[in-house]
Image (cartoon, rainbow, N blue to C red; front, side, top):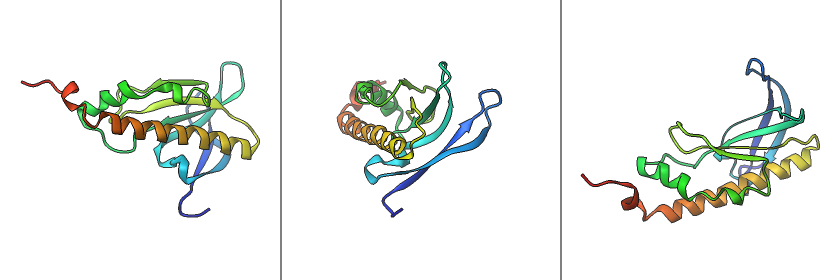
Length: 144
């Protein structure tokens, strides 16, 4: 693994006690995937019994108060739709955070590809959103 790549270890999370119990796999994310945007991750069992990966994807830097809402407002979740099972905003965090799920697959190469695809798509979208909101402060800040 070179300096432009990141490793992601997916652990099985026990649904009864919340403990991370066993390693499901280690995956090398490409530079384009920007693995640093993954705040946390784990594998659990979906309602249908299949294993599912949960990723919490961040915004890459600390957001000012007005940027918090703007990031959520301008983020287009449809950009991740081809890659994920579910997508949700995680309210109540210090910075905007998105919770996504995608199917876990045993084949390491296929799982790596899925992780690279979703994180690269998130990086492209969050970069675009940061650019879009750069001149929107007046829309979010009330004057006294």
